[in-house]
Length: 92
Image (cartoon, rainbow, N blue to C red; front, side, top):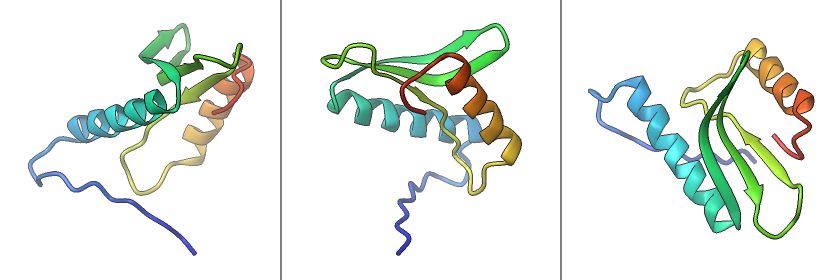
């Protein structure tokens, strides 16, 4: 069974605003799960929407990439996986 949650915003809302709304939702969710969340991390050759470090489990780091669209491309997935793997995050 496939479960899906859709967040409906006004028709005049830009894709950037939709993405920001989704990122805020994910940051709030991770915060309730005892993660310290930093948003919009930019390093050379990499951009991650959020990096979350667990407050009680040392060295547990989660990389988060939010996409407010129906389908994510294989290039986007490979890039994200490479960032998670290269930076030795616990989860992505």
